[in-house]
Length: 194
Image (cartoon, rainbow, N blue to C red; front, side):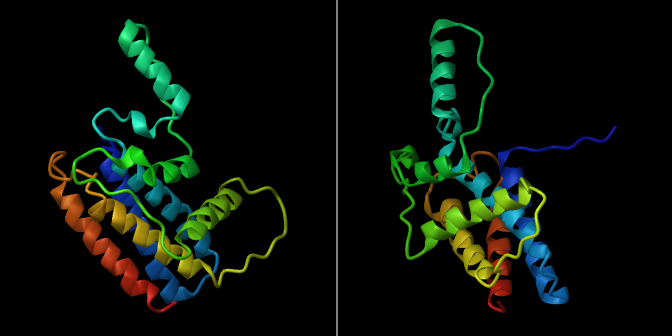
């Protein structure tokens, strides 16, 4: 039998790896269609790192508020636990800027600089266009995509290493920590050309 092993660390880092591979491919074939997959995988990557930074010890921070409340009620009253529902991308983004990030004594909240907030919203908007594509004939200006990717990579780097909320060693994922550092470096080196 073959098994797929996945957890929130593996999901985030593997998505980052795929994003970087797709970015490297841009330089080789200059196929603009590839941007669709870069945007999609980068969105998944950023969402994964937001979840890692917000999860804490019980993961309630990453759930939709009503779901987290229902889960707490079930815990207190010994009722059946509700299905967990991950909060939306933009709500997770709001949470990484809020006291939801205050998980440990050295935790840091994300403070957007320059146009990072705009890039987060654009990434979400374009990803939604591409994932929920309604038959249409459209042209999308892609000259701003490298900046969106660069700024989202900065946010991923902050979450991974500067928020102090991702506990790589506690979860025995030091190898993924090293891989993440290397992938961010590769992504930044690739983005120099765009």
